[in-house]
Image 1 (tube, rainbow, N blue to C red):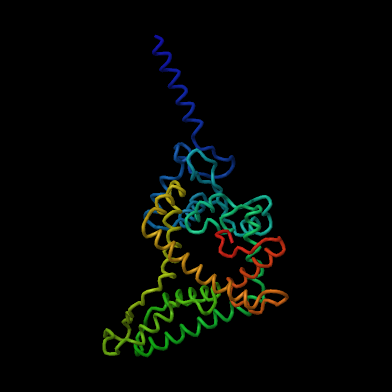
Image 2: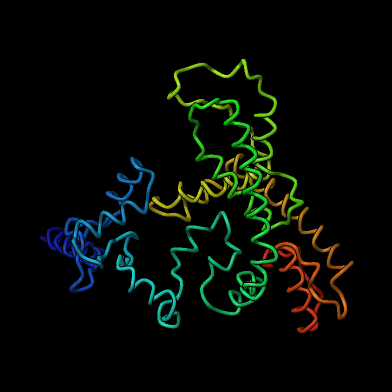
Length: 336
């Protein structure tokens, strides 16, 4: 009899624990009823969807459409609070631009970028650490900086891709060819020039141009006038390849049950370690160039006319902040 009572009590306790651990929907907001009855919430359907499409954002859009509501909730953390999906543009804009004190950056963002940029301010919630990193980037979107640094980088990149297209058009001799990857590479080159200066050692469009210039016209595959020409693609430089590889890992993580756990495994991959080292080596090389340029041109009462990249700007800003705070500049610090 005692054993039956004990078993009954244990069963009741386990059932109570099960009920307590189940997702707790917020009242009045649509959700998937089946998910509210599972300890894992929406995670199984999320993993199934993302494994097929590879698109986390598409899963989110489908939830809004499914519930026919601009706001919905999903359960993406076992035993955690629901995640609210706000799919109304005006409301989302209002939250992002005007209600920062009420809605801080979610820890979700920090988990997404844990292995690709955990020291960046985008992964930090508002506080001293966030403010210290944010100060280094101030004025990068100012009209003066955009006109003197960003715009010339975009213009030069546009000229490079036009030259590439002239070469391709000549070889294609009236036949069509794909231009989407060329546009992607041109935008990538513009970003690299904006970030590190026009002297950055790698340029995706230049590599492709060199390859196309080396092609023998007679080797171009023949076809009908409407058949597209398939041009070979040049290999990207080591630094750019590593940066793109690390960026792509974010997509591998976003649909994981536990993003931190997924990052834990990815960080132990040889390909991750190599990409991280190649990226860091390239950044430190460019950073040292900016430091030397600052030592030569940016000290004392001199102005910042020497600044020709976002990296130059951040080195200059770090030096000014260090002087103001009575410390030595730390341009190579991971937190800078």
